[in-house]
Length: 224
Image (cartoon, rainbow, N blue to C red):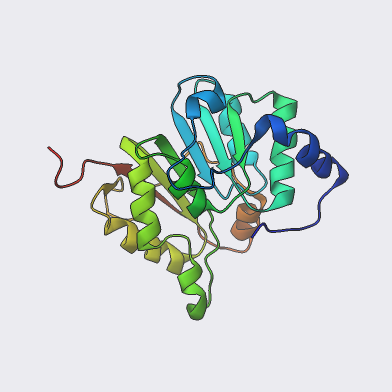
């Protein structure tokens, strides 16, 4: 379900007027993946950010790397509207936005090996034990995500909840086609490309930690 929230007049205008330009609808059948060349009008490396929040990180990346294509996935409508406004203001022709469930997007919209970089920053940790099954980073999801990455493609994540960070490491390390880029097999230093969010700044003021993870897609064990 799309997450609703308080939408400003400008965000509502963006959702109504800018969606035809920047918006993407997921195919309704599993067999019909997106034609990325038609979507962006060119062939270029593709970065996908799942759960882009208010869109600041994704807009910054798209502006800094016009040679790449960017696809953002988010179900929070105010966040979608805000990123649409940024895309218009900064003329981010290399950015497209999908306001649908991340699992559906990966499974239905993106073909195997079509993604060069997949970013997942601060997904909902679902703190309570009875809600852990709702976490995005689970074995089945990781297998699909790894399959959508091309060989050498990167999966980049961050969380401010240590138990979830530990769960992420255990789950991702168990995927045979992903290699942890950490020398210690767990976390990497904070990357310079990641835009600091207001939630992260608030967490730092409260003394919370942030854990960054980085993986690369390698050949499967049965590939030559």
